[in-house]
Image 1 (cartoon, rainbow, N blue to C red):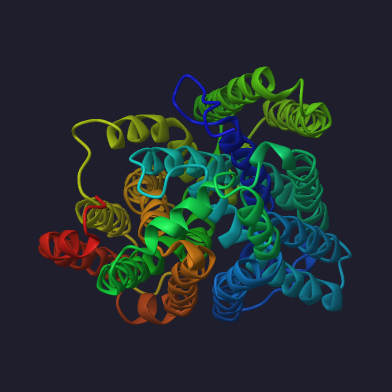
Image 2 (cartoon, one colour):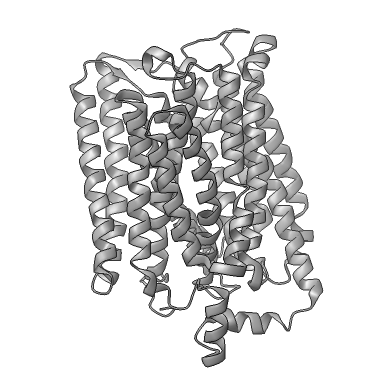
Length: 516
């Protein structure tokens, strides 16, 4: 399996993981796009009419805990059940969570959130661990592989926000929550039915031990454990220290970036001109159609290539995957027709969040090529650049809101500022997140890769919690200063952190001991 590479040098198993993660992120981001909007919407529109501060605090708790449980899920997989079974169990629990939220009662709403937190803990760190184990421990292709995998993450986010957001806002909140669960189930099935493609990767520790006794060369991870035993403890300690540094700096990144689901969604809903008519409405409808169809076409091409490689051996898995794409295409054409038939275009507030994912889908192949070329910068330089690009995005948003009066609850500024902000945020994300996943895989001691991914996601837990809590301050800061000052805070912090990361470049490279 390891030698069965595609033309771009990556095994077909990577693309099984690509689509599994895509449907999981469809469910996560589809629900997340609706969460704050549902909570703050009026009773007459089917919402719960919460105050902004309360909604953003719940958002902080949920998005924080979603990234805390992976440290437990990583340990369970490392020590007990293996990565593959953890992924399947996590997906099943999350499917039940989405089904609960679609029941449209307060009890089932909070039960659903709880199940998704638990399920994500089993799923998230372990599917990332499997990606890393498809390659030799210090392979130069890992940065590229994780960037491709990250394209799958954002393809799911794009489709989830687009369709769940649209159906939730336009048709009914419970329909949006329920749709997320359907595709989580389909993603779980296509992964579960393609287990043999992973060979001995991701088995439980007990099965790996038995395999090592009968055939020490059957599992590449066994060989890496043997090779790692020759390393000094200092090398392992230094590399873990680098992981900790990278994890700490991602807190600054995600604390700002995750304003997308909170304060930036409120900016889109209450401060951005989203009602278009006449020629502007027609332009938006065509641009929106072009964005959606081009993204779906790219994903369908990737799907077709996977089918060519795997359909013969994994027909049932591919049938589940193919069915899910047929449903998505049908929903896309239904949505676009419904929008073209409307005389006035009101851009859903959740629509702006798809821009991040669209830019990822279109830019990830370019970044993947750069990471494989002679122009590939070091990990710390990538991190620093990503933080600075994120800060520039918020500076643009702060400039766009400079005309909004102090204390204003509503305004109508151009949507151009949000579009530009999302573009720079995306470019920064491509320098930080997939690269971070790759370095966790390369730097971690082989026996605790899942746990190290868990630590990485704990940093994301801290960041998401801070994102929600700082986002909940939006009304107070707008009342006392302005919304421009609010967003400028999130411009200054990442830029400063990025400059510090630049200064740490040489020190961190030494402690990576040859892994660049």
